Length: 63
Image (cartoon, rainbow, N blue to C red; front, side, top):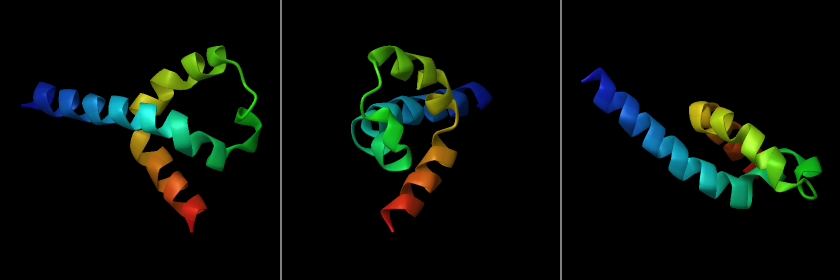
């Protein structure tokens, strides 16, 4: 059961990561606009793991 929940969490994180890289990361940090792809590769694992925190932060910046 724990492995299934972890898998679901990671799948949601992967989906969130791709949406976040396209739309959300620029709203949280303006300095990312001109950043190379290497920077996105570096923050990919953290974005997948910490997607609930980033989602909350992204929602706050939309308001």
